[in-house]
Image 1: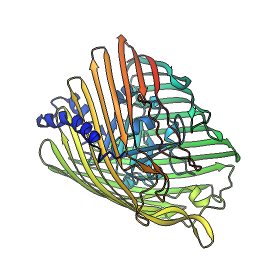
Image 2: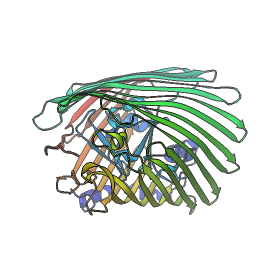
Image 3: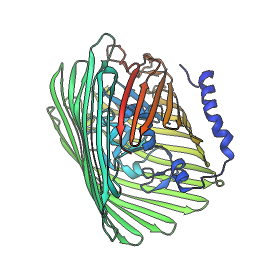
Image 4: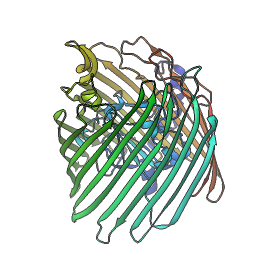
Length: 607
């Protein structure tokens, strides 16, 4: 299925965009509530609160209302088809997943949870599939390089998950129970509140499913996940603030040939102090863990990685301008049944960013220096310029560099690692324009990313190891929009990506070039109805572009009923047309099958 040349797909997108175009002449929001909803405040793009149009970045916000409406069983379901986002899964329900931002690999993007980075230091990428969406209240997806702010691996962008924060007032309980297809059961409960400057949020969840076969003729492959979250903060009379966060997910996932017991965990404490009226300083101490114990045909293996980080961040207000500067120190540790040549490495960094407002011109400039024990020194920078054409339209242009760090597997895996590897480096250029109106917005961006020293396994000097041998060029265009008209909520995105290996001319493995997503929801008194249509073009499962996986279209449906004060019920039907599709293959050539039609019902109590 080729979306760009499919008249039906283009017609559907045009129809979705029609009300946006018709309303384009409407003025900007008249109230603070409307402005927040349609032009939300985001913090990931610039390390400081900025509205979406002021961020000078391509950013997508998935807020609490969106998460509640869609009620996804996994984060990958939520991400699929979002602007510039491609998701590849080795099956459904807790199976290995990769998230490609603008055609870059899963290891070339950063995952943050409330500012704390989570990833596997051995594999080099996050386990996106092992986090329960019900633990989070909002998601920010920033596309484009952010190495000058976040360091290694922020080549394609940054995804940040935010946990709920309690508010002053009486305790607010929330309980949800549900289940559905594949003998799936879902439970969650939380309590939030605050008093006297202290705010708290405590939550727990359980997900358990028999799953489905990973390939035709196979047995069901189950998955369970038990998660807990504690968030606590206190603000003193003078404005100083202290807080802590602890999130832990633990469970088991089965796959063809074995099973894995896993732990995903982040924990941190912070203190923030007003040094002067215009200078705030924040210190965060954190730890993240990615742990897996696997039993398969090769035996029993353990891969546990731990990252401890100290980050000091200072924000100084200079009239309408703002300066952000700080330092960061982190240490990775590996504990494994595999005897790595090295099991620790540290990284020290300093960074600074200027946010300058010369209305109608805005400038954002950032610079970061990293010194890593394993692969040496890296300097990254970025420059973004914004120009307000009028009250409704903002033009932006940006350039930035980034790098992807070689993982412990790349450097030190026994018999295969290459300790002489350098980091992959990239340059990205982007041009975009955003229209912001009272009931809608639209955003158009075009970009090019050039990546050098890509790490690939190849034979050289009589050994098969990873070497810095490949180059890539990724070009793309993204169009996205959203609207709230009467009781309708609409979101649409269309992405075209050309991810090319410059040495072979072939498309990079498992990337789809074309992607479309349309979300429509309608409030009908105590009822709500909605649906999502996601369509993606074909992709190749091999570097030679010989194994082609066809494109697909998915329809997800949902309905909600507020049948009493504080009580509601929700029905979701994922892949309602029972489409058989795959985004990856086994080495033997069989497709990794994703779930067919799946219905889930849930009952909720609380606000």
